[in-house]
Image (cartoon, rainbow, N blue to C red; front, side):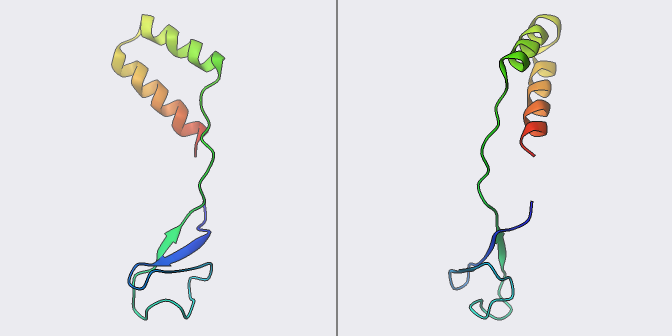
Length: 74
């Protein structure tokens, strides 16, 4: 994902141009990203994880949930 704007914490300025003259010379400019919509699990995916609770350990269940959510939200 590419930044949508840039922020200079030394003077509080925000711009869509990283090389804006509003920014402090030699200041640290931080990228700002737009907020994305969270994507959750479908009922089918939840059922798959429920099956894991019966057949696998709690750690395997947590890792599988984390991996699926990372996949859907990156």
